[in-house]
Length: 322
Image (cartoon, rainbow, N blue to C red; front, side, top):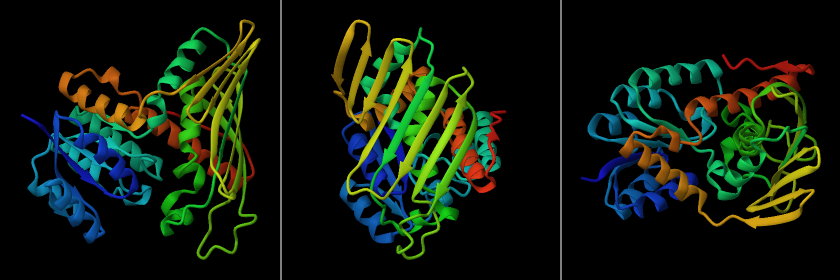
């Protein structure tokens, strides 16, 4: 019997997940939902699923084993709580929300229901990221440098702080999460952000440049630069310690130490890897396959929201992960 999967949100990231799920012989996508009726119905017709424009109706009428929540950060409403109450396993795209209190409530509902909850921090599933983590496991990290430098996203809600949380929360969160995954939790941030050269964009109120300094619980220091004022796209993380350096630049890993320099290329599709891991975890009950559980995504969100708070107040913010 195929695992029955539903999807709420069939935009760009939803379509990425659909490609992998449709290629997985263990599952069948039986229902999709989107507030854009044309997108919902055309996707449903293409894959042979039921189509909805109301997530409440989808959860009422469909019997699902798992649900992919691929909606913008402002649009989660009570999707996770209601799905968890029905015993439906959840894959929640990043960022998982914009309010830590609401996210904590969702996490509590998932834990009470005993479901598996994975999130969309796909970089963790790259083989080179796993290789870097293994290399760093017995080393003391001193400095962590990250960057996410790209072009503007045309989607209207993305430019509104109240709907996206800004670039750091909605987009560069991937880089910050990889910094956390490789170097450990962040305990303090100090951020500066400015809307400097993009004021001509209609309706924009998010900063176009950000610089975030951070202290890790290990004592390591870090820095993350983000912007959306470039014509191209560059993202990466560099980790330094005594006599070693680890650089992840897109899909390439470079390790430099006293033995010399070695370079490795990623060989896997990170979206396929994370989706197959989620399905296998449901099949087997092995939650160790989930590299980005909801609780970890909550910690990444806390850092990005703390950075926004610091930029507003002009003061460092200490992060509580309770």
